[in-house]
Image (cartoon, rainbow, N blue to C red; front, side):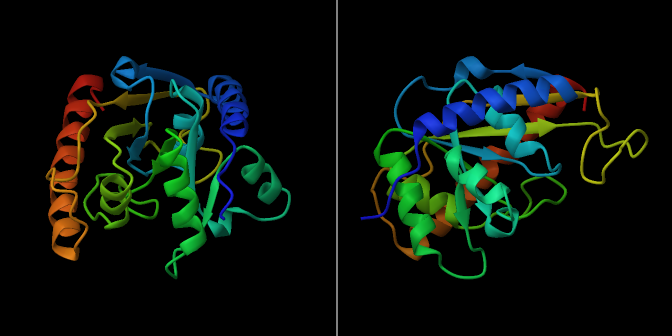
Length: 215
């Protein structure tokens, strides 16, 4: 049986994230009240900065287990990320261990964090992978769209891919929605249709978040 990551570890990660994120940037959190307080849930997060995961982990109202590319688990970061309940995934293969652990999180009523675009890019949800639809439909979990909007200025950046230190970073949580059509079907066609539905919802949330924050 595959071991499910520890929720207690993810709670420790959340506390570390809070300290780090508020120490280095100025997070402004909007819509956290929309996040259901219990039950399986998926945060679908846009990905344009390296701090998107830690930022959401720190400011979300519930401990979160993110699917993170295995390349991030190097040296001392490997036991640390594993210890705070994060999930290592090999993006080049069908990583059955990661899939099983992620579904285990949802089965236990936990929160799974996913970057549906796969890699850091424009952060506009333009190209979604089917993985998000699979976990949502198979795990019976609603999706909460999350927009992380940091400064895109290059001035003041110490490290490429990070917003300037002490700059404002907005995290906007959207309304939860179901990806499936209610039939529970998990065929390729059903997942493609679910991915399309998800993309519309995430894009609409991002546009709304930009209007709301002026980003």
